[in-house]
Length: 328
Image (cartoon, rainbow, N blue to C red; front, side, top):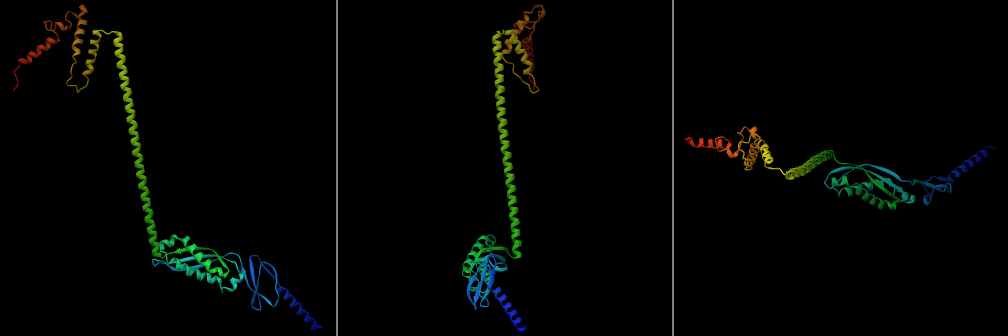
């Protein structure tokens, strides 16, 4: 009995192992390569799959999702003979599990080496300044070359990114100094532009203020002149309307004499010819006052007689000046 039990146990174990090897469950977004006696037969997709135990074997399980692979910094020489270290990141996806298994031994290593060689070819045709400012151009060129080369491997390169471009330390110091100088220059230019704009605005403001002030003074002078003209016109019309006689005009002339003589700078002033007529009219008016004048009032007609008067006094002074001998 014991040998039979042992045989049954062995058969049950073999059946269990056969069932395990027969039923293969492939996760989503994965694939498996099946070989029969070492030869490729088919690719197992996601889900439940059945294979022949002990005859079919799973060669490789491949993840079909997009993969991200960062590569270590690679020294690259630019066109102007400067060594820069460039870090790259590759985004790829396996589209054909059979080709990725049989067309290349290690597609990760193959992509890395292809990236390095392609990057050296691209950077070798650029100088440092263009390398630092042309990341999009480098990414596009690198992706095109990698996608074309990895197509037969069943791999699609979706994106290539340059993570870092590190020039030499001396070049970095020079670039920082140049950047600082450019910033100082732009700051000085902006400050000068601000001062210039401020001066222009201030000059325009002063100009506009002067123009407005001159216009205001001109309008004020015009209004003042118009007012004076209106006042003179009103006085003239009032005099003519009141029918003023010679006496009133003579009195007005005498009132204007102190105003003519006002001021310390008036050393010489000219008496208008109308003053004589005014004085004659005024003396005639005062002579008609009678006893109030005391008989010795001012009369221009009697100025040359003994009664005396302003003209007679002036003639006497002129005669005294003529009799004096000249001074050597």
